[in-house]
Image (cartoon, rainbow, N blue to C red; front, side, top):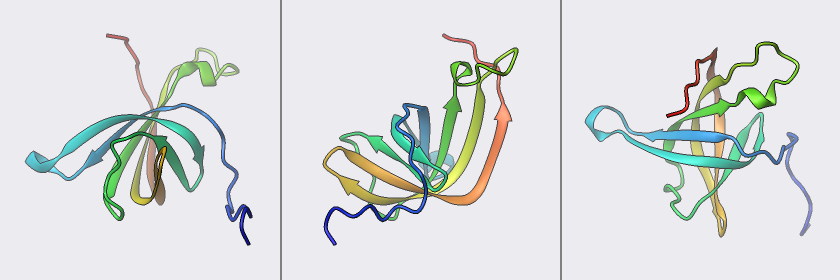
Length: 111
């Protein structure tokens, strides 16, 4: 049925800075993106530089302190997730997250 939302997980329209790594060692490439929306199962990134479908990636999302207003003192958090490029659209690409992730507080010092 056309126009039906088949998503099982709620998506949130939020821009989160992200680093996406492809490969390892000397073959490792790292790209900087910003999310357009995020769910527990994946994220959509607005970009013209899409990665090939099926590419396995490591995603690092930086949750900025402004998102944690109730936590004092607020500090950024870093979430590392494995994922796979799931689909392309005219506006960008979707990455599905695996169940492997790591979350840690981080110190953030602007350059």
